[in-house]
Each structure stands twice: as structure tokens, then as C-alpha cells.
Length: 464
Image (cartoon, rainbow, N blue to C red; front, side, top):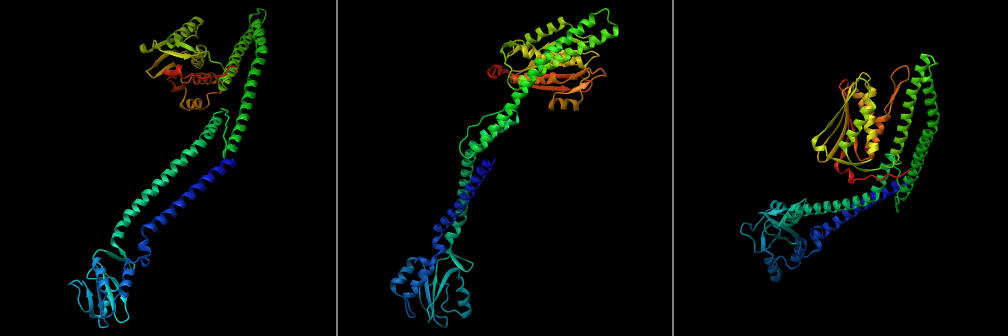
């Protein structure tokens, strides 16, 4: 996964570079917008520049007419104070401004305002030059003068820049997200497939090619293990059939041999019964393996679900059911014409497994109900009984891992959950899902739910 680490590191580095570039752009834009405020001395129109220009154009006695006219055009007044604080000359001096100032008064207004006029002071050597700007034109912050128009624009500027930064970050996030998802979605999908036991093959170029190669190797390994397991199960199933058939044959002869003792014949019958259970277990195991690894071909056709249930119920009753048991059929009227695209043989096998589970787990007898319900969207086949049911703990255990072995008596009359696992695999192979509902002492109900348009979502499964 070194390639994945490099991929993430590269994108983090790009994001960091983007943030640094954005910060630099903010600084440059701020400097361009507020250049005259940051460097006021470089601009002749700034207070400092105009003050210096005025000082050069005036003396203790007078000011040039050109400079006075320039000040009037900008609505700036001026005055020149001698060593005693008396005004020697002035240009457009407001009426509220006195003509004489004490040293204390000069010290106060030289630092800020005079009668609410922002003032700027120049030491001319033989006196003090004072320029007064219009009220509300400049404000003083931290011993510096700033145009009030700039101060008023500053919050709007900050808001605009913040919005622009957020927009840029969002755009970068969206672009990066799309790019990352485009590159990583196949990898994540392949990993999820491996987690489900589905080998996948990735073809990715660039930074994640190493990760893709690792996943492909894991997929090949998983595929080989699955094939080995399936082949082993198929081989064992085949090898068991012959000796099992011999055991059944010999046991049958012994059970029918009148010369054998009663106890011997009873033992032969038990051997026959357990041999049949072993054969069923092997068949279920083989079929589950084929379904799990997509090795079981589905012979699909459009089948009326109600007809499938009735046919199975009739065959079941003709074959005979255990003593104390009964079979009922419940088909909702609106479901009479509902069809499913399915492998009728496998779906019947699933229903049969559920029915036989009900018979086997309720030796005292029970009523088994085969039913069909649903709505416009869903078709639900269910098998329910009114038997002993199962506990909540056992139900959760079956949902997590529906395969267990449990000895019912000292004769090793084993029951197993392979039938329930097979039902689930058959249902999932048809695009449906199985739900188990049960309560201790109140029976058990298993629903097989299929989306109505199942015939439009065919699952392609390779033939053996």
C-alpha cells in the first residue's frame, strides 16, 4: 500500500501549496488595494506628501497663491503659527478655529484633531505649519491617520475576500474530491468485493497502479482458494456417494432380513435414516458451494408463484407428512396472478427445506402454512409454523451464521442449519432476501422477499 500512501501525501502537499498560494494572493491583493494607505509618503496627494509640498511653498510671512488655490480646491485649510502660538497667516481658516494657541493646546491638536478637523503639523523651524482636512475625512488609529473612506471600506473588503477565499477553497475541494473519488472508487469497490469474497480485477494506471496490482494479487489468491474449496467439496461429494449407496443398500437388506434379530433390524433402520441425512447434507453442501461461488446455472422462467406453492403442497401431501402435522395454504387474492422470473426447481428446494425444518424441529407436531403475500413492489413467499419456535439469541445466531450442528439425543440424531443457509443462498441468487421471525414457544416464520421486477434484474451466473 505504499502507492496509496504516496497518493494521499501528494494530494495533501497540493492542498497545502494551494492554501499557501491563496494566502499570498490575499497579501498581494491587500497591498494593491490599500497601497496608498500602507505607503502614504510615496503619494503626493496623501496628507504627508501635501504637507511637505505646502511647507516648501510657504514661509513665515506668506504662502504662494498657487499653493493656496490648490488647498482650496481640496477643501483644506491652513495656518502658520509663530513661536508664541499666534496665527501669522491662514488659508480658509474656519471661524471656530481660534487665532492664538497655548503650548498645551498645540501639543494636544498636533497629535490628532482640532475642533474635529483632522490636522497635520509640519515644523518649519521658525514656526508651525498646520493643515486641516474636512471633518470625517481621516481617522487616527495607533498614532497614524487613515482615510475614513478606507476604514469604512475595510469590513466590506474583508467580507468580500473571505467569500472569495471560501469559494476558492470550495472549488478546490470539489475538484479534488471528484478527482480522488474517480481514482479511488474502483479501488474501494474492489476492496469491498474482496471483503464479500468476490475476486475482482483492476486496471489502473498512475499513482494507484501499485495498489491495483496488490488487490489483483489478493483477488487471484482468493479465487484460487475458492476454486480449491469448491473442487474439494465437489470431489468429496462425489467420493461419498458410492460408499454411502453401499451402506444404504446393505442396511436395507439387513432391515428386511427376517433371519436377523429385532435389535439388528432396528439398528439397520437407524443406519438407513442417518445415511439418508448424510446424503442430504452432502447435497446441500455441494449446492451451497455452487451458489456461493456462482457455479450453479439458474434455469429461469416466468412462473406463477401461487401455482408453484400449490404444486409443492400437493406433492408434499401425496408423499405423506409426519404424524401430528398439517399443511395449509394462504395466498392473497391480489397475488394469484403474480409471476416470478426464477429457477422453479431451486425455489421449490428452498421452500421444501423450510418445510422440512419445521417438521424436523417440531417432533410433537405442528401446522405448517405456505403463503404468498406482497404489494405492487414486492412479492413475498413465506413458510410459517406454530411449533416451539426459537429463542431470540438463537435467531440472532442464525442470522449471523446460519450453519450449526446440534445433537438432539445420544443417538447422534444431528440436525443442522445447512438447509437455512441454502435457502438464503437460493434467495440471494434470485436477487431477493430472507427474513427470519420467531419467538420461543410461538412458532417460526421465514419470508423470502423478491422485488416485483425481479425478471428485469437477471443475475448472470456462469455454467459449470
